[in-house]
Image (cartoon, rainbow, N blue to C red; front, side):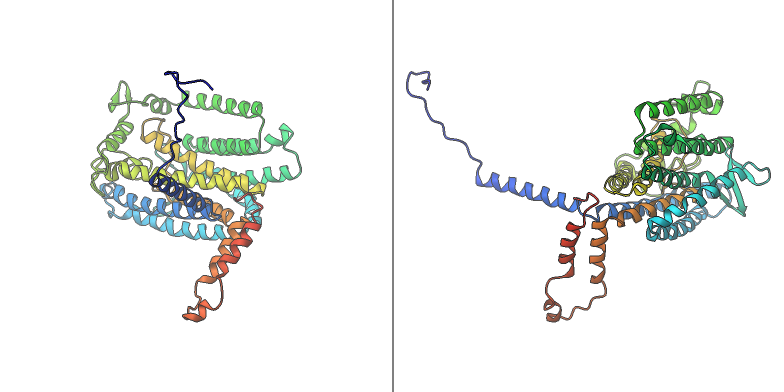
Length: 453
């Protein structure tokens, strides 16, 4: 053993041990982390995230629609609550659709795939019939229902592609046909391109982008080879570039990226710039609910495509981050449902719905922030528009049904139901022994065949 520098024997230094207070702090942190992890990893986490997140987004959206649309309604000589009442009616109908979808079995969802696709194609073709189709903001993709009510069939095309595509790929996977590229693409890609063609006939490229995102999401989940995936993506990009260059309006939107002045050369970037002005004037906590300045005629489409900008002005950074957190939680829950199921249809449908909502939210918020071109798509569950709200809430009901259908989640839900309405008669309730919840938790741990940890 080497000696010390002084020539004497080496000095044995005592090993430092953490003090009792440090040990208590570390144990407390570890216990807190363990509790959070267990709470986050419970079987019903995805169910509550989807239900609670979608409910909060919808309610906050109703509040912001009422605030952002008042001035627009008054300028049109309408009551101040006109748009809010229509959105509230759509939310009530959408809640019924959500509850119905959440209670439907998976077999019924698969059975509805073809009827919904056929109905969507029929309505999207009906838009192009003179006298039936209605043009709004230069895009002819609406059908008048009488009075002030209109429907946009392309919004239901998103739901149709998700359900029909998930059912198609699931059936081909059961027959082990996805290893062949022709079965991977046909008829999924041709039908998707047919829907895209019907949408582009009306000039709505924003909805076409969302539909393309759903298509690529389904191909990715189906395990498409990299060459095949890149080939389809390259073809879609070439078509997109040609469509953008063929339209002066789309080229102008592309040139407004990063604009700081309303008139950037020959291009009018009024909407994009005033969206940035609204966000910048909000500060940390905003100017207050209803106190937006930009909605007084300065910001076009304040209650639809640019409602996120009004939210940032009135609720500030705290409000916008809350909206982003809710969408992030919804996206995480959808990915969790898709990743922990053994049913191929549930995996593809949950992944398709998650891709749809996430991609649309990213495109809308990115356009408001000036990071992406303005595509003219609403913020899911948040912006004004009943045609967009109804199929989206039905899709949320799908995710809730899939989250409830997991074996562990099913056992946990069945264990919680007997607690409601149970009589508590003092000592009589205690003499029954342990609650049924403890017994069902042991059953749930044995029934986690879906990968739930």
